[in-house]
Amino acid sequence: MSLFGRHRWFLAAGAITAAYASVSVLARKGHGLTAFADIAGLLIMLAAAGVTFGNARRRPAQERSFWVLMTMGFALWTCNQSAWFGYELILHRELPDPCFFDVILFFHTVPMIAAVSWRADIRKQERRFPTRLISFLTLFGWWIFLYAFMVFPYQYVLLDIERYNRYYDILYLAENGLFVAVALLATLTSTGAWRRLYLHFLGVAVVYGVGSQFLDRAVVNGAYYSGSLYDVPLVVAVVWIAAVSLSAREWGLDSSENQLDPQWRKLVPRLAMLVILSLPVLGLWAVFADDSVAVRREFRIFTVLIAMLVLGAFLFLRQFLQDQALIGILAESRRGYESHRRLQNQLVQKEKLASLGALVAGAAHEINHPLTAIMTHSEQLWGKEKLTDQQHSLLRKIVTQANRTRDLVADLLSFAQQAPGEKILVDLRLLLQRATQMLESRNAGKGIDVSISIEPNLPRIQGNANQLFQSFVEIIENAMDALKESGGGSLVITAQQLGNEVLLQFSDSGPGLREPQRVFDPFYTTKPVGKGTGLGLSAVYGVIQEHEGHISCQNKPEGGALFIVRFPVAASTAVHAGAAGA
Image (tube, rainbow, N blue to C red; front, side, top):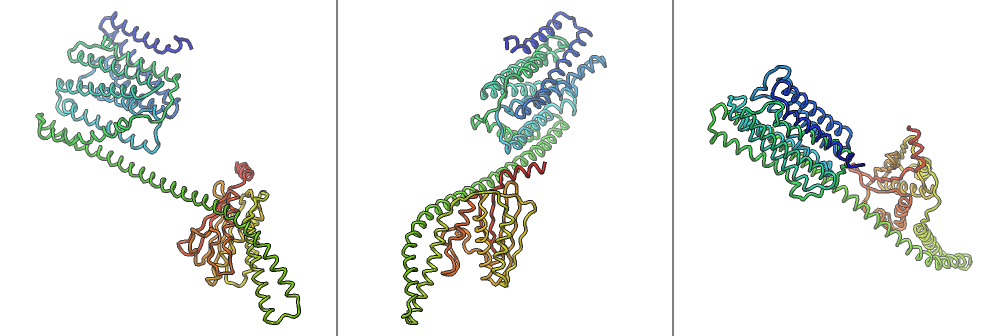
């Protein structure tokens, strides 16, 4: 883009200012100049408000707060300019002094100060947004209080034009000085296109602040009239902001991470605290040092009490939100710690199973060779006819223990050789029903009531049907063994979809788990010697991990054990379900 194209809006602003200044110099004081000044001023204000409103609607969300506050400032400014238009051109009267619209003129700068100090160039944390907003509302409420405390006693309580103008000018000067200070701080602590934007607003604040003081002096001295050169700084400020707002659409105002010094980040909360602390001081001054008449002094004391009530409510609300945010951070930290600990336990369990599997596989193979020899020679010896009854009894015990050892070796090899296997789409409904029916038939008449509840249209998962079936058998069988020890009870099996997961729950009414944290440890068992190796649930853990699932167990508050198994829904099933839902 050419140099003219990049600065076209600023050139247009300069041309408008030059035309307005030319009319102010060349035209004589009269109704024509007044009409020109009021109409031109109102149109310029409306155009600038329209530009900032357009930015508030079209710009990204991070910028929107800046332009919304600027639009609020221009709305108040335009309202004041409309008063001049109405009084001088429609009512043909001079604007009264003091006037209600002086209040609107005073407060139009406050949203602009908030727009710059809000720092839209810095990416905000969502949880801090309400507390920052309350801090700004506290400062805004303090400006309202300060105006009521200093100016209202001479404007609405007992009219005193001289003191009214004096205190109004002092407070307006302080407000414009704050605008300059905020814009300067934003310029020094920002980068890129935002620094350029804040630098322009710094220039606007200086021009308008200086020009407004000259205009106020002219009003007091009776030298001001609409269309005079005293209006030129106002026109410069308005068209400058409009030009900046239009040009900013092409500047790429990208928000960045908060790189402010921590001391600057604490500025707004500290100012809010200072505001609260200033109220008792001003109240004491009104009681003991104010030399005004009683009605003004009473008004000021009443104003302080109302401000303490309102701003105190803001303070308590801010503290409440901070407490809630801290509680949320603490809960989030606790959840993160528990997730980290659970993940760590899973990694330890995986490493434990992997290393133990390699050890067990080697040991089982080594045991298998002498065990085969023992079985073979025992069978040969059993075939001889010249054995005594005592020898037959001892030989029978040898064969029984050898068979038990062989079963143990088979379990060890099964545990150690958990091959991934071929995975296909598996219907968990069928596997659960088959495992339940098989074990119910084995435990008929034992006082065990098994109920199964499976959600309709339960999605399939990607897995090995045989491995999953054996895992379900192991979980259900352990639950039934626990129920048999306690003389019977109920086992409830549920299956449902939660988001992109399938959730299985095995809940029994037995005695519960003695050590839930050790249930999946290899060789851990609470069964009597000879009735369990402690490898079943360890193998189940490995199978479910291989299927990218998760298994956990716990004791229920009302008694009994609860095993929870989660599997991810197969991708093709999830896509199909989404299409069906659509």
